[in-house]
Image (cartoon, rainbow, N blue to C red; front, side, top):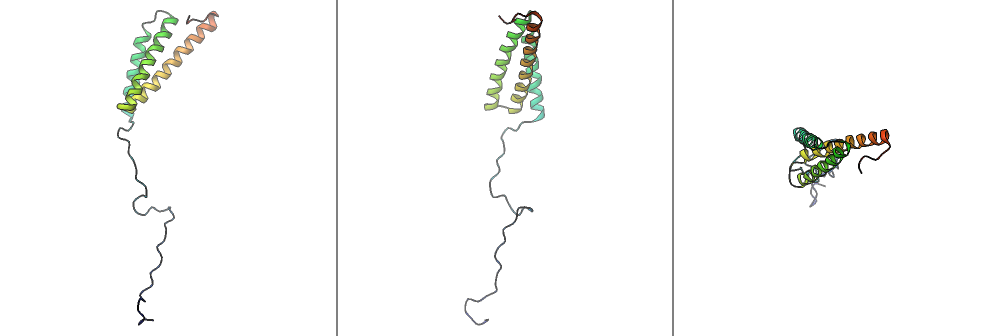
Length: 124
């Protein structure tokens, strides 16, 4: 009753939102990457790796030389990409890694075609 001590207006219990409609700030913090991967960074890495592999591939005088130079250049490029992932631009590292994998695939295909044509393993 109105005269009883401690009696006041009855408050409804707070409702827990269903999540369908966001209400307020998120419960967990959101983390942002300090150096996000961007399209121009990936493109720069791809063009750089393409030029790198091309220059090293031109050093080979035959299929054997081309394959070994491409393998060496790709290994060095992936080392550079690993350093970039840790301490630099991850977008550039992504472009380098993608093009290097493609360059190695092309070299492997050339070696396989030569092997199929001649029946002799061209790398030894």
